[in-house]
Amino acid sequence: MVTRGTIGRQARVQIDSGASSVKKNAEGSSVGGGVSSHSKPELSSRLAALTVLNDVYKRDSFANLDLPQVLHKYQVTGQNAHFATEIVYGTLRWKELIDRILKSAGLSSAKTSVEVLNICRIGTYQILFMDTPAYAAVTMSVNMAHHQKLFRQKSFINVILRKISTRTLQEWQSIVVSQVPKTQGLQRLSIRYSHPEWIIEKYQRSLEATYDKSHGDELLVPNLVRNNEPPSVTLCIRPSLITREELIEQLPKDAQWESTHYSPLGVKVKGVNPKNLPAVKNGSVGVEDEGSQIAALSLVNAPLKNEVTENKSIKNKIIEKNNVAENNVIENNMANNTAGNNVTNKLAKDITGKDTCASQRWLDMCAGPGGKSAVLASYAQKYNASLTLNEIAPHRLELVKENVRAFTDSTIERFTHVDGREYAQKPYKYGFFDKILVDAPCSGLGVIRRRPEARWRKNEEDIKQLCQLQYELLCAAIEILKPGGVVAYVTCSPTIEETRDVVEKICRDHSFMEHLDSHKIISTFAPEVVKGQQGLDTQLWEVPHDTDMMFISLLRKIN
Image (cartoon, rainbow, N blue to C red; front, side, top):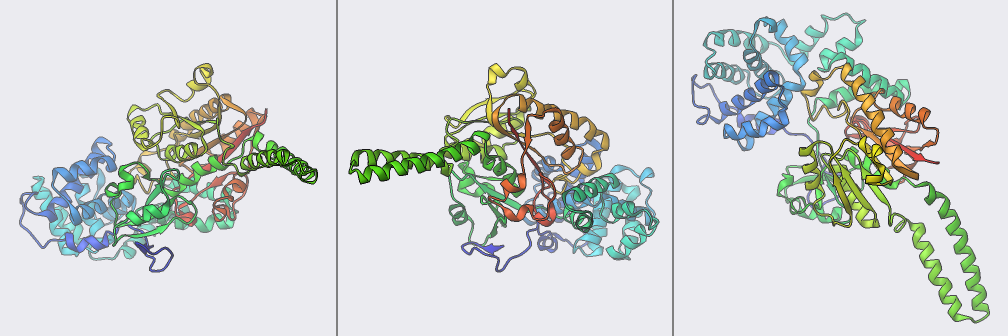
């Protein structure tokens, strides 16, 4: 990552939410109990974090939606807002390990209220994971209890957290992990890296399917580690509206940035509020993980059946026209020679692919929130194709419209608000499509670094129900796919059940669908992505790709 105006890898720094840069600024010395949350920013930030955690555990709220409102309520801004954010997300990510440590320190979660437990979690996270001095973490935790009128629990919280502060994180990890037999390898990983055991097992199976077993095993722990780190902020250009260089010119002078390693559309940034960039305001740039960019680009670059066969015929026609043109030159028939050259130029233009998408119809069947839709719209506009965007959830449909607001009406054919399976039931209403993206609803186990509470809410039964829906959506897409057309099946989950199993069942039940080599297609713009991967489908990982765990499969209708 580099500062603005310099492209390359020099001065590269790790992209991180940078809690360590704000921790000391957000610390306060010991203060008396019962202070106003608005008069002590160091207490307000912790009270905001406590409120969010209470909402997550009591009301099943989502931290990313709840946090901005709570920060506003407590008037927490700047470095203190960063501090509160780090506490919330860090405490949620490390819940399993923190709770094990608290239990070893004498806290029984079964006999402790959610609010007291969350105060202890916040204090433990600061002591073991942040640069917060132990005395500040303990004192502020006691003050939080006082502010919440938990007077009888103040001394208990004080004792527990002081005991926590007597050991380092590594020492506590060793203590709690050693309580599990070495033969229970997945359970030990579950505690050390704070993931449900069943999710680790799903990752392990998928890694072994993506690579060989030994390489997959090597990548398991690095991916668990990365899941507990804040994701980078990645900007995505709309190539028909702006270039990457033009975006870089808009970044603040002190911003750190680097171009994405695989996608030709992205820029990873640190120290940048995307909302302040003119390109984001006018819709020519959006925030989109590099993995999602690659998924959309794979469909854009996937050839239709008629493109593959027609290009061979076109090449032969060009040769024939050139021969005719040469004969015409010999015969001094300049008019015919000019006409031959015009035809040759037109056919050559077809071969470049620049006009091969003209009059094509594309569909994003599950479009919300619209990041991939915007990438598709960019190329649809560039190549004179039309794009239909469907989303069943009203609020997500509004996000889709916001994401593609910069594109012309001729590019966006229509917005629809139906269950994607309805497209197959009423093909006369919606017509047929050359390319379809099915970014199917899934368990989201590939993006839990962004939604840390999700790992504690999901269960294996959820996946079983989702697999049937995913299969039905893909069947519907196949029904309305034109002969020679391509459908991209994409999920932000790496589980075998939601990815390879669904595709295999589709291919068994639809013999007229050709399973394309996604590695070959993705290699046309990002060859390093698929290095070492097995099979025909592509599975992205946080390690080695530094993207969300996106699965990509490409299928083409041959009859």
